[in-house]
Length: 312
Ligand code: G3H
Ligand code: 13P
Ligand code: ZN
Image (spheres, protein in one colour):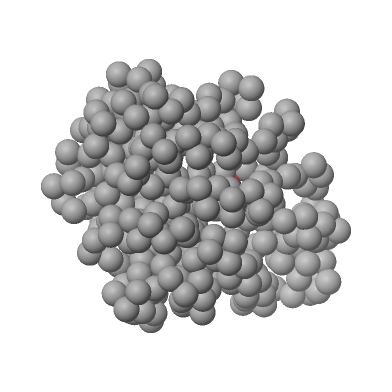
């Protein structure tokens, strides 16, 4: 199965099956290996997503080569390769040329008309190549590489506007702002996830899988390890996993996670360095980090109700 030929079918299977596909950000070999082997172990489909920054850091072709190698190693795992937060038509086009089968065009910071126009341009191009398109309406708080929005200026997705947006753009999936934000410091102004809004959006947008960005739960056990071993992530806080499961139950079919991967990796590397100051073999600190990421991702798959959802 590997990199799937029909990504929409996979998204719709999640939508109808009451589970979500985890969309994990990949930046290097160890993270990619941990994510895919976790999904093989739990028999779950996966979305590997690459931000513009990841593509620049590791090189798009290098990450694609890693993904192709993993697809060969685990042929039973259905994989979607996705452009995370595409900031322009050109970014999405170059992703498609590199072999991605899914792209996000994020023009959510534009006004409605411009968001529709930019999204539509990507949809017209991508659909001609059998690639699916995620678009965003509303605006999350937090930091993305091309835009920074503080939480009080975030704009939750308006259901009527969302309906108009999907009808006009024909995007396949919809990223909606429901109170989450990117990064390790969520809900600084005592916000919460608006699960009611998910229920309304699902009702008003039948057959449109919803996407939840900013879904890291920032597990406190890893924050503690970071802080214990010389780091300072005081006050780091994420989304309750029970809330994520609830949102999935009500129609969220793609759940984006990056911060938790970074957190686990940092915790494990810090621990090895502090406990073994003489250690300098990268395999001795990247290896434990990779193992722990796999463990964390396997747990997320249960939170998303995605275990055992590979259809043969
Ligand atoms: O939405 C943001 C993702 O966590 C990607 O982050 O742009 O630093 O790679 P990045
Ligand atoms: P987190 O920062 O909560 O992991 O969100 C990642 C994300 O939404 C990537 O698009
Ligand atoms: Zn995001």
